[in-house]
Length: 111
Length: 113
Image 1 (cartoon, rainbow over the protein chains, first blue to last red):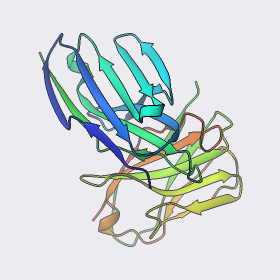
Image 2 (cartoon, rainbow over the protein chains, first blue to last red):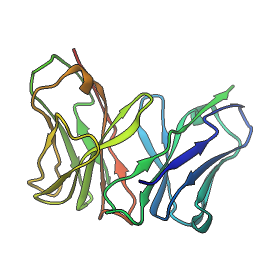
Image 3 (cartoon, chains in turn cyan, green):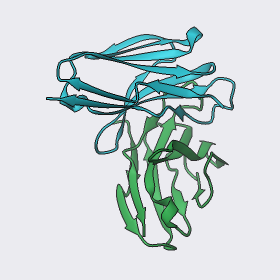
Image 4 (tube, chains in turn green, blue):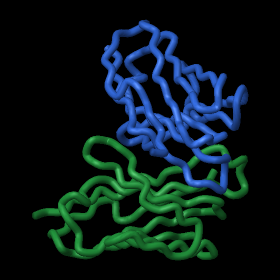
């Protein structure tokens, strides 16, 4: 099956700093999503981005499908951005049954 | 509001006592799925459903049952829960399987003593 690798595994920032999270995947995908898991465990949809670039406030994401990676940018980070960020993909060559998740980036934003 | 709902959100139970975690979506989605999340193991799919009366096993189906009698509902049934089923469970749905965004419920924290 498809492999999804996220980096860095852990990231500690001071409030106001910018950051870039990376997601590499090993095969072509139909679907790529970024999620934020908050401290209460909820998975919040950030972006549905199988290709191209999208922006939503302080967050933006870019997926280069031909090179099999996606980037999540967080600008002017806030303490409420803390949590785990997951990249998840749906393999194009598979039976399109499930999202395969990366292991996540644990982000801590200090006040 | 378009959403996926799960109930209960938290549950502590004992080994062997049958339980059902409900999942409902109001977006007329055909595809629904259950995942469990465990430390060090990430999110793994339990079962999925491509449409009403169509269900299939995911990666970790042992000890679970599902049914899809209506498009909006996809309950997860634990006939005889065991401590290794202690986990955080998520229900998800999308318009169709594959090239569509998946939406996740708020999660159900289950503890089996």
